[in-house]
Amino acid sequence: QVNSQGMLCVFQDECLGQGSFTRVFKGTKVDIREGEEHRTQVLLKVLDANHKDYWEAFFEASSMMSQISHKHLLLVYGVSVHGAKNIMVQELVKYGALDLYLKRKGSVSVSCKLDIAKQLALALNFLDEKNIVHGNICAKNVLLAREGDPSQETSPFIKLSDPGIKVSLLDRNVILDRIPWVGPELLQDPPILSLDSDKWSFGATLWEIFNNGETPLKDWDLEMKRRFYGTYQQLEPSQWTELADMITQCMDYQPASRPSCRVVIRQLNNLITSDYEVLHASEAPER
Ligand SMILES: N#Cc1ccc(Nc2nc(N)cc(-n3ccc(CO)n3)n2)cc1
Image (tube, rainbow, N blue to C red):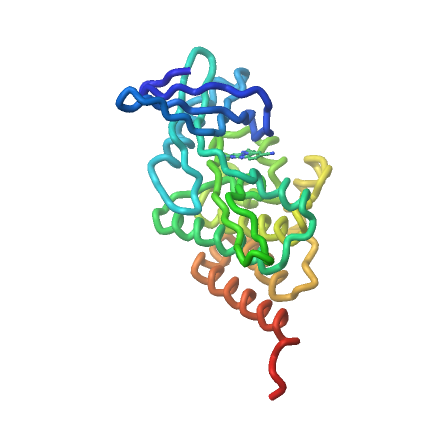
């Protein structure tokens, strides 16, 4: 496929996963500069052909991502519209989606989880300061560029993925199925998408991170999910009270009562410090 910027993309075969109305494939981007061929491994996110009417929203999502740059935001090279296919070309992030990674690893340390949570909070704070709503914060859209390896003293490094089709454009049943990540205010009529909605989703993502990538309300049907919000329920609280409190504060049914990104970052720093103290208490010299 060649697009306007002369970006040539070659598909590899295996499908790596899927989002709402999209499938993702590994691919190679070939740039020709000064007659030289430069090949880069990329991730190709293809909009399902039967959802072609979403292509403007698809295009919008990728242009939103390609207009801003931050170390914890996914790099989007561009969109290649070719024939019936709409393809978003993204940097290939080495370890893929966080939910699958956590499920696979099963034993990521608390300090790594806190580090990942803090990086996600920094990405949200960056978007918040630019008054940009992401609208689809969840562990599946957090990508792991580097593993945390305590023995090598390396910390994990994440990139927040594109939000995909704007949530307010989706059918009500698709929004219902995004419970508990989607803010309750999005199920009102009309749905109110605001920066506060991302804070709710951050809370649900924190829950995923500290539950080893477990899918919250897995296999619940739409009626049960609707009732989860209808009766103001909360996700299963963590034994770690400070963490449980933080998740509940983010998942406040009153959007305006949710903590600001600054408060979230400060609370995460407190958790990191208290985790560090607990972790190293045994090494503390006798006073
Ligand atoms: N085995 C394996 C493996 C799989 C994926 C990657 N990398 C990657 N890079 C991106 N830019 C986006 C994604 N996504 C995966 C699901 C979605 C849906 O949102 N995106 N994966 C690296 C290794």
